[in-house]
Image (cartoon, rainbow, N blue to C red; front, side, top):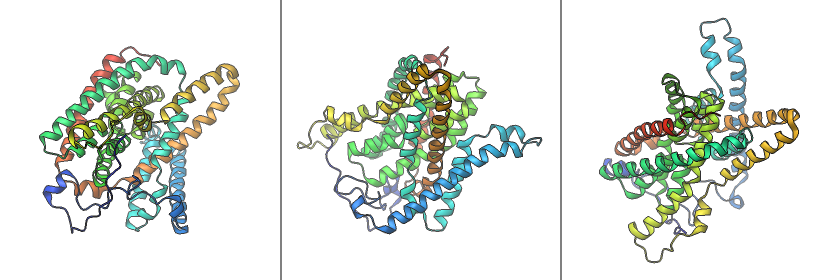
Length: 406
């Protein structure tokens, strides 16, 4: 099990130098609390004031309002555009686009008005996306998961190994701190922010390094949502290959789901399976990093060796919910027959709502300041690793999912 994070240390410097910010912003706020929770995370429940809950309620109203506006635009813009020059474009725009754009617009408003930090506890991207993905499992027949598991596992193993080692090597060539190298390599090779969080706990990274890595992930993932479905169409990729490419290349699970939704329902299913498979390996990578930093980098004799308990602690539990939902739904439809389709339509609609909430939260959570503070070297490394991931994932998807049908 990884050693406890270092105690929080708050910088009092006026600002970081150019040299220090190249590796990580030195003037960011604290590292972690003594209990291991992030320093800028909401306080424990027993320490939260009435004002905290009131502002969180306001933030939740903002998220729900933007989600409702997203659904309204999705359903009505194509109707408004009928017979006009933009009719085809309006019909092609789906809910992830509206949700993210409205989230970014809301981000600007709450930042300018100074409300962002007060209501940010309501931006529960991780909860929304994991709930949406578990519900997505209910719409995927178990036979599809079983048939796609083999190539998905092969792609995940090859892709994670190749991209992680390339990023680690390149970051070393650019002289980045080992902890930041671990965060960048984990984020770009596995599943973005979640992998970076797991890696941060494993290597005891500074809080500002994690915040910076998360900002990079979001900054690169947002354009990928729209770019990859378009490129898949230009390249004439099949739904299975397009989905595997999207699932293996885009860093965040939420962005994978958004891009998959734009590419089509079949592509979304394969993209989700591929991404969930990569997520399942996050625990393995986290434990490997824990062992490497404990035994090689930090060389602390009092650090215990990671065991199976640590692997289970870092394992993304929602993966089990995804598979369980598929098993239950497959059994239910087999028993209920045509009558079960109405129930599954309700589940699908609920899944869309949770995904919309996640995409809105993505837009609300973007922080440009973290990117400005960190310098150009980590950005260059992350960008180069993303291109490498793009090419390698396309090659693997084209080989492993060639001729695969959903």
